Structure formats: C-alpha cells, structure tokens
Length: 167
Image (tube, rainbow, N blue to C red; front, side):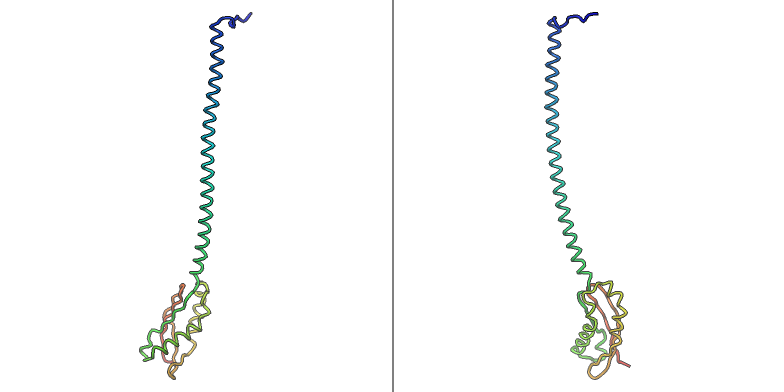
C-alpha cells in the first residue's frame, strides 16, 4: 500500500502550512502568556518577601518592647517605699514630732526590705511584725510598745501600727 501524494495538491499544502503557522503562533502565544504569568507571580513573590521582612522587623521591635516592659515590670514588683503610720497616737496625747520620730525609727528598722521582691517580703512578714512589736519605744520618758494592726505588701509596704503602754 502506498501513501497518496497529498503534498502535491495545493489545498493540502495550504492545510499543512496553516497547521505549521497556527502551531507557531499558538506556541508564541503560549510563551507570551506564560511569561506574563511568571512575571506577575515573581512580582507577587517579591512583594510577599518584602512583607515578610517587614513583619520580621515588626516582631523584633515588639520583642524588644516586650523585654523592656518586662524589665520595667520587674522594677514595679519590688518594694520601693515603706510607709509607717501610727493610728492612735492622739489617745496618748503624743506630739506629732515624737510620732514622726517613732515612725522613722520603725522605718529604719525594716529598711532592709527595700528593693526586695514582693514574694520575699510576704514570706518574711512575721519577721517584720516581730521586729516592730518586740522593740519598746521611749517617748517623753514613757515606754510604749507597738502592735501591727494592718500590713499591706505591694510596691509600697504600708504598715499601720497601734501604740500602747509597755507593761
């Protein structure tokens, strides 16, 4: 069997030439569309990479801020001030200067609690009470004892005392 000589007929030649030209044109269109899509995707990838870098920089900034905030909070968690108040000094007709001196001496006795963290101070609150209550106070040639009425432990250690005659 023999293949018919279609290559000699002009209609078949036009058909094959059209197929070749159509194939070439479609290949060019495919390459063009593919390149456009690749360029578009490459731009998208570069944009996303830049956003990722920006987010990483933001994360670094936030982490540094977080560390600084933690450092500031650690400073807040320590006892920074001690307030001493004697509640019933008017009952014993004491002058304000003597009361101030007594409060100051008590503050000096427990000033070791300054700059300690709150947990340590809370564990040692019985020791603080004993330091205050076991020391007699001499005001105007009379001896008094102090009793802890209320103790608030926070960044400021607040102690409210009651005064009474020493027995």
